[in-house]
Amino acid sequence: MSNHVFGHCINPDCGATYDIEESLFSCRACGDLLDARYDWDRMEVPDKLSWFEQRWASRDNRLDFSGVWRFRELLGFCNESDCVTIGEGQTLLQQNDQVAQYAGLDKGRLFLEYEGLNPSGSFKDNGMAGAFSHAKMVGAGHVLCASTGNTSASMAMYAHSCGMKCSVFIGSGRIAYGKLSQALDFGARTIQILGDFDDCMRQVKDICQKKNLYLMNSLNPFRLEGQKTIMYRVLERLGWQVPDWVIVPGGNLGNSSSFGKAFDELKYLGLIDRVPRLAVINATGANTLFDLYENKGLRFNGGKVDDAAIDDYYRKLNETGYKPHTLATAIEISRPVNLKKCLRALEICNGLVREVTDADILQAKAVVGRYGLGCEPASAASVAGLKLLRQEGIVNDGETVVCILTGHQLKDPNATVNYHVEGQGEFSNRPVEVENDIRAIIEALDG
Ligand SMILES: *Cc1c(COP(=O)(O)O)cnc(C)c1O
Ligand SMILES: [Zn+2]
View 1 (cartoon, rainbow, N blue to C red):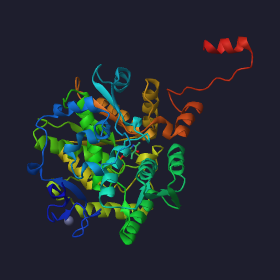
View 2: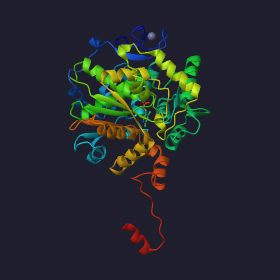
View 3: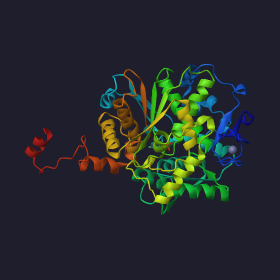
View 4: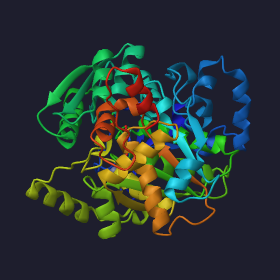
């Protein structure tokens, strides 16, 4: 298998290639990001996507049951015996007319991809199934990540099931309780660093390099291979039809990057005839991508990215001591590690970037909850982003839209309870306090 796939530097001026058996998270020659690249001509790939439907009939095979590995021909970097799965990807694509109405979209046109149904409650499990399979293939013993919460919860769950040691680095105070409780329960060594996510990220990269440990952040290209399958499942639920739009929250930009790669490869393989447009949604309090892409005009430019503009931007963040701040802690990141790959995805998918406020996010989150699918704050950025794009007239009448709900409602119960109890918005649902008296209680029922 391994000679059909290799590590490949995304910088076209470099283009270095690496053996897939190496655990490398940036190019040794130039420091840029790496992809898993396939020599498709030497691989056996189905000639139409509906071929994968035969696997629905063999769900007692653990790989066919997995929402990641039932598409293994499209991420064939390891042997089947190395594929790690704990049943990820049993997710739902729900048509939701009420949320559509809220966002100003026609009936029948909005689909919510509910990734909260994954084993650890977020889309990160798709990526971990990929990365842990690579870790197993190369014999990793100790895996590490920096995390705003969900990466650590997911990594800890998979590490436990693979018998690997795991350590997570979290910033001080900015982690939702549902996520912290998972990392602790799954037995991760949890190191709380006095700093924010970006500080944790810098440390974990250095330490993995110095100590030759295995990095599980989305710098790891095999995470993104697993996350491609979110898009395969969306297509699967749409009868293999390509939607007009995919809207996704942007944090470290791994998910958006993997979606672009998925569509690029499917198009190359002739398995789809067009790609959807991609909208990546930042929180206003963590809007590096929005600022660089929409205000400063930064583009992928066929791989010739203006590195000086990025360096300059980050230098200014340092000089002003800027710290990102949003209630949507999963996307509270100001130096997204997959920035360049996301720019590439935006180029592939004729994409755009928007920012939404915390108030917009909380409102959209409450609407998603009211109409039946609970999500965490960051996830609702996708729905808030759609509402904005409808107001701007960019998403057109009659277009089909998929919003990714990245994580489960119970990840961050504090955000939900505060919104409702403190009456923070239009959809707040305050508990009603009454005397312990039947008449008073019945009266309250009619309120
Ligand atoms: C990680 C995460 C994000 C951000 O995804 P990126 O791939 O880092 O852009 C958004 N929402 C939730 C719930 C997450 O866990
Ligand atoms: Zn390189």
